[in-house]
Image (cartoon, rainbow, N blue to C red):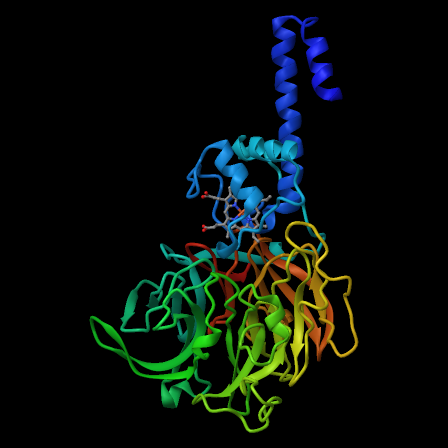
Length: 469
Ligand code: HEC
């Protein structure tokens, strides 16, 4: 009551000019409150500048669910469950909803995002140049020879990209570009020079219920002609049972990596069904291990456990977005998205439970507590974790010659934080990190090139990092 009464009783004392400036102050205050709510509840998905990320941009004034203030209020209140937009009915009161809408409608350029890290930077040691441009959301970059890489676009195309050339590979399996899903990772066999196998992960629709989706892994070969390139000899390596396909459009995983013993590892995110990350009869929320031909290693930890997926290697993994076997130590490094906070760096081991959603350093997107526990018996701690989330994505080990001082360090990309982290590890121990690049755009993938440069996939291009002289 106080606010309204105050406004009413003072209004007649003010001149028109004072009234206008009081109104302006009111709007400014409303924007400030809205902004605080946005930072707390929305930016992790919609981006620090509303540029989008896990969720669409709100800066373009294009509204799929209706563009009136009432429409926007309704979406925030009720959420869009299937699309992955949470309901905020319980946590944001009506007055605050208005502040939030006012803020969303206000000039977004005036908003300066809070800094979320005081990690040391080595940005002054690298030169950044464009290597490939005009790409549509490149998801993975994988070099197959000097100056030539395979590049996936989330929207469904696989490209052979050279310094000044590009050829589409026709005939790859159809993927579903929905939310975070689409054509995802590409990798080549450790013996690629002899056998030419190329591995893909993607969002696959069930043929009898095409709205339901799950991550699928295939391999095939690429026949390169003078004017076209074709995908041939396809084999399915991992496909979930139809009962485990899910309609949601997020948390698909799924980087592919290999160890020296002939195993292939890949992750599948929890698909928004967090309890299923603890359920061994489900493929989601897990790291899987298969042989390169898709067969199951006899010593996988849950082989013979009734109902369990025999490919499961570890569980309780929320949404793995980076996996790489360290060439020196053999440690299987994994980065995964936490909810709000609690992004993790894990060392993946056979049969181990990484705890999601029983333990986490994060909280729910709407600010409510997710779990009171950050640690419980029988559940593995992360090697390191990022709170607030940086939205880890893409992981490699630097193995080149151009930056000898960084050899053996992890290169971890980040979407929301728009950075590449250079992480110093020794065995399974975290020894600190620095920022290699920052604010060039959301980082989807990062890899060491055969020339020793570091290549980074950004929203529309791939950049090449070399030492600054
Ligand atoms: C967990 C991630 C997540 C969070 C947190 C989140 N959203 Fe969303 N939001 C989404 C997704 C995903 C969609 C898109 C659904 C679609 O395209 O079908 C969406 C859609 C929307 C839309 C509809 C856009 C349109 O085109 O009509 C609005 C408005 C919106 N969100 C506002 C907010 C606000 C305000 C907040 C904070 C209170 C918020 N969201 C927090 C994921 C999120």
